[in-house]
Image 1 (cartoon, rainbow, N blue to C red):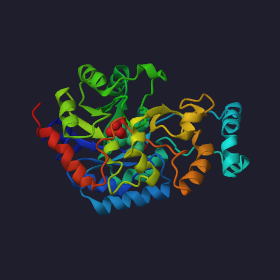
Image 2 (image 1 turned 180 degrees about the vertical axis):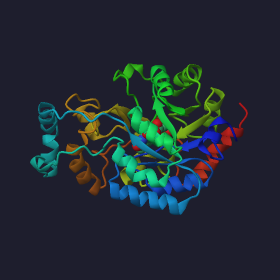
Image 3 (image 1 turned 90 degrees about the horizontal axis):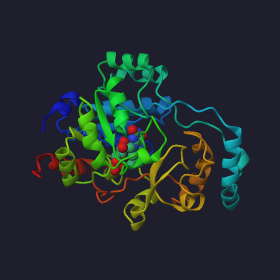
Image 4 (image 1 turned 135 degrees about the vertical axis):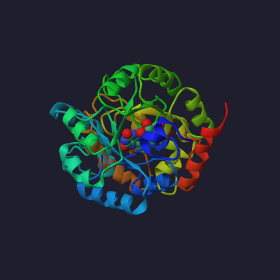
Length: 351
Ligand SMILES: Cc1cc2nc3c(=O)[nH]c(=O)nc-3n(C[C@H](O)[C@H](O)[C@H](O)COP(=O)(O)O)c2cc1C
């Protein structure tokens, strides 16, 4: 199917594999791009060395367009009192695991897109760049646009979509509340402002003059067709790719996605400091998914990481971010190309 979005992205189909930091690298992006959709490489958590390695793998794996994804958050001021409260909340779990909380390294874990990052990717000439949590500063945005990169970003409200359109986004991802992973919200932290895909999408389509891409809860061809019927120019799908052969999703995460546990997801700040949708696990149940002690994004990650590593080594996802959208019905152990082929059938379904 060809439309304004395929023209913009240079793809055969208006389908984007959502960038998913922590559960995929270049292999998933390559498989999806070679199947005619737009594969994405999440770059927010990559060191400069890892980024170069992944860019080489993209270059070697496909001649089709691929999207590079970055975060645009404003790094927070460290807050000693909140950090102390957070460590206090986690202390019993450290004791249970026999770990030393004093040895936890402080650190951000995720850095926002910067001129440094732009230097690292410039030679690659990324055809598409997508951002979460807004857009980079105007000079940085102008720089990537001079390369010819098409710029996408997620909106979770009508006001965010209008802001993105006015500030240079070439297409806007309407991220419904069903979506897995971090809410892309960047203008408010009021979770009541967040809407489901079916409510958000038509309102965004009416509000802006750039193509709108539906995301959140789309797991099969019928979901794709429904989004297109509501005026989407294309779709972005994440959760449905989490159990694909090429994803690096951990075993406890895959098991949770394909079990009854996936029926209960919640927005949680425990793993990073920003609300993100995860399957509910032990630490979310016991501390409460939105515990106010969790430090601001991305500082909550550091003290949770040793607990996560400890329990994952024992085969448990009880302290891991089990990111997942509300619709896990599409999670299948299949090559990503097969999943892509199933989804694109939705573009020719007549509703
Ligand atoms: C495991 C996981 C990790 C994610 N990581 C990112 C990310 O690094 N960058 C980003 O822009 N979006 C990220 N997202 C959100 C997706 O872009 C998208 O909004 C979401 O997957 C769509 O909803 P769905 O999961 O129901 O398909 C992530 C989603 C998941 C499930």
